[in-house]
Length: 269
Image (cartoon, rainbow, N blue to C red; front, side):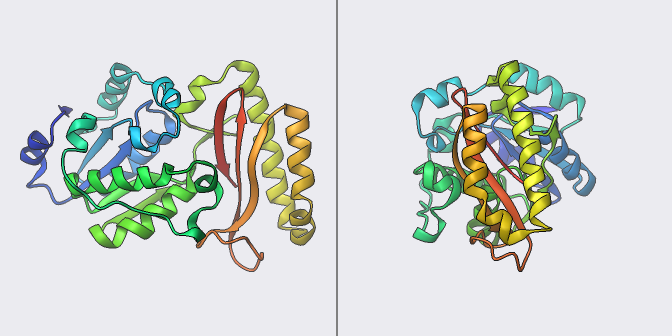
């Protein structure tokens, strides 16, 4: 595996490869990332993984500072997976050139965008820059952050003529895998597992009694908050395609975000 740290070296290395899959990450490589890498390897001749903890998408400086990082462990995992290229740029390198800034419309300021002001603008900004640099025609993203996936598809897929390959969320003990999970203690992990199981049951029941379950969401929200001593930002059924509040006439998902012991978790079912 070749580890590339500069845009100049990257351009020299991959300029002649047309069939290369791109997996953007912020490190902390886990089974979810591995599933994206394997999907790329099954479809593309070569795969490039980026590790860049993007400062502009963090709402709090402390959150950025404590974000789990272990580059040597990540490198070891990626080598075992036989990834051809690892791109680890600096913030100075990524933000050295001018690029379009993205502003969300009022209709987009829902779910996490409502609670994390500027977060997705930061995500779209860095993804725009990374895709400008790498120029892959196949991008691989997980469905755990479904709103992020939706926005990247809408804002960037046509611009770069790129296929956004979405991959199912990988879970262990019901919990969606995330680098942030490393910040949870054993007690919090147990709580999160139980919460996830309860939410999966709500989604299952909604298929049988949609209107009744939707009506009772506030009750379930308060019940979970009280039982597990958590703060839920949102618990909503939304349309899978356009993220509008659901009328249960098309495919939908149950979206949740909550804070448990100062760690924010998101998921959808």
